Length: 224
Image (cartoon, rainbow, N blue to C red):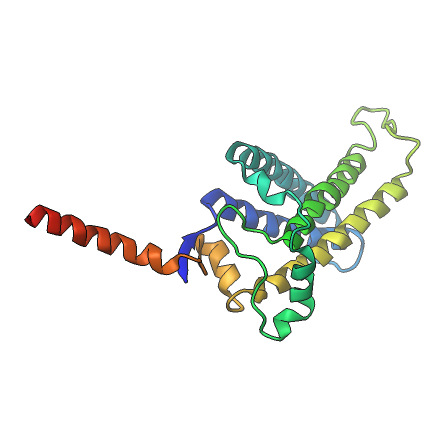
């Protein structure tokens, strides 16, 4: 095993901030729907709106970061070992079978994770963002209070937005469960907090021994 730096500072900041904002949006969203009462309807609406703008700003920065660092390549889908990965999560993990893929800084996601996160970024998140903006600006801010999109009923927009919210919640539940499938139940969470993760490497012993051997050889040459 080798301790490898996997998750960069902004990556961890973006991950945890996004998680908190999504959780807060879910809480205020359910209160707006009348599921419970805590902040009060008006305060819940205002808080939901502010958190939504914060999430949009965070998403804009994360898109910029992904493309400038090349991290967007992590989400390129591949069907290589996809079947083996599904078998591992459904059967192999309960039998103690080895993980079919190897994590590294360049390949942080296995094939199933890459497809799932790509779906989150291309389907679920846009569904929430687009319907949320339409709902927010459904009526203009002028004195006439004109409807901008009369062809699309507001109730339909709200239903699609709610569906997206349920999909995000389902994703979050599965995501939290999947964090427990690492070397230990908390190793993945600890890695996202510190940035470092203990990973198996094929040349692990070589990586550890080479520096010592080179230092010894250099010292012997100087003595000669």
